Image (cartoon, rainbow, N blue to C red; front, side, top):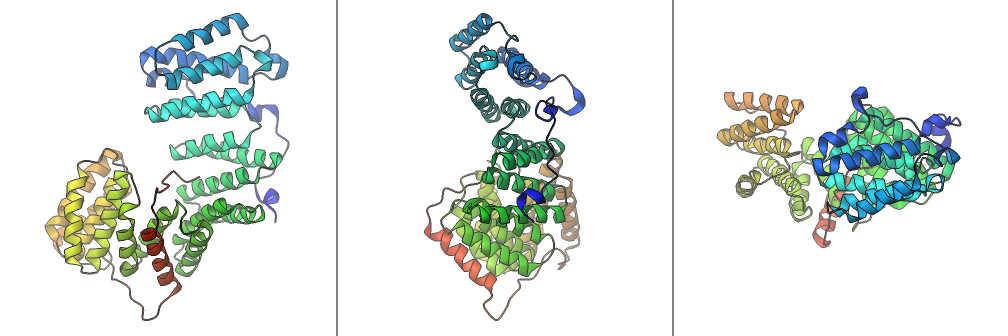
Length: 436
């Protein structure tokens, strides 16, 4: 089965497939979130540009010619260029308005580029809903371009809009096939696979990532192939097939190459999987080597907590003490708490392994507070279960697994050594961008 046959049926789309309204939850007024989210001095202007843009995308060809009075649009463009608010927002809006003044002659690539610049500015300024609506506007402005559809689908997935994300990502696959853009097709398939993982549909995720690997190999796209293999490793960890998981991890490592910026991400995922399966002696050296691989403070904290758990399981009390002290010094300084609750649970497990009941209780109490504030119900449940064990001061293998050991050197042991060597010998600027 080739890639064209393996995705959804590919009928010739009707025009509305490319000019559908933006997918605003709740069916509210399109663009209302821009007014609610942005500062008053720029909100109305951004909303007016968006509404004008949607009028333009709703027409085709010569139907765009009479939408706007060119003189008025040109005057608006000049006004935007002369304004004093943030140029990161103001100048892309001016580009969009300037192109709309040309009506049917407007260049879709410039309109789409301006919209993406607004989306990037909005993300950097905490205006997520505005970013999403302008990213969708970019994809509607250049509806035949698969990479814009992939970009907006990826953003929607990352920001918790799975239904709309799937729509755009499947569109991206169709467009990529028509355009002969193999890389865009592979990346869209990977993104769809990751969406299936998040929705708990692991068979579908495996199918999509397998398609992505095959297509990437045929197209000689080394990095996308490595990314798809990496995700196949993640999928396989959910099926308890350790041999296959290790095999995909090896293949991903080889496809990336030892100096690729995503090696730290792969190493962390592999070490965490091994740790959760009791292979602490493999995991600890990797977590130790990862200490200097991430710039983001929240990821550094997560690595410290994981290393503390592994050290506790191995009975390395002095190592645990150092890691515990560093974690205590760092946790109150974290601005981004997206991984804090999970990390605190790992820290508590390290203490529990060493029968440090008071420390485990302290970490779990903080984890529950953070997780409840963020609505992380699964983390709350896990932490509450562990806190019950602390109260009874009973060591239970269900919560603290043994350090698994083998007498012979396995392929997994060789992979662990290779990952450590790569982490120790490369000056990393780790790529921690969201997955496709």
